[in-house]
Length: 178
Image (tube, rainbow, N blue to C red):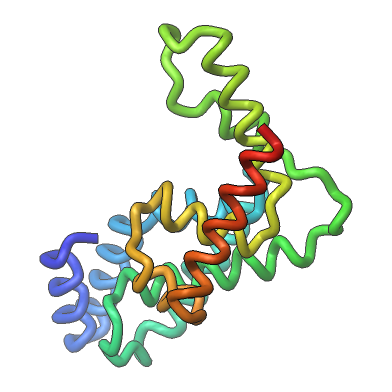
């Protein structure tokens, strides 16, 4: 979410009900892909990610009037999405395989990547699916969303050092699995 869009949302939130609806629409449009991708990486399944993203936006909509501008709006919204996705993942049976490998591996790969690229993508997605939900959350926020250590710490409500220790553990585990 750009700072301009965030300012538009915050300004609209101070307005009447029509302006507030517009604010939520702006927020939804600017964060939809980010929230859905984060939920996918945490839950590991397309259906679960869609459910988690929908639940997250409902929670964001309900909490929006109470947003106090102590953090960036996008950070606050992603925090809600991460917590919903983690809760969704915990509801799944622990021994249930994550289906992410089949869906994520081919996403964004063009024909010139060939079978070898798709196979590597599947191996990577399968390895990521074996990480803990907390490690996948940090990895997704860092590697996919490109967020800073500070922003990830705010989103996950953990110390910044814990962000790096989880990221390090995730990278080490991926190295072992690959």
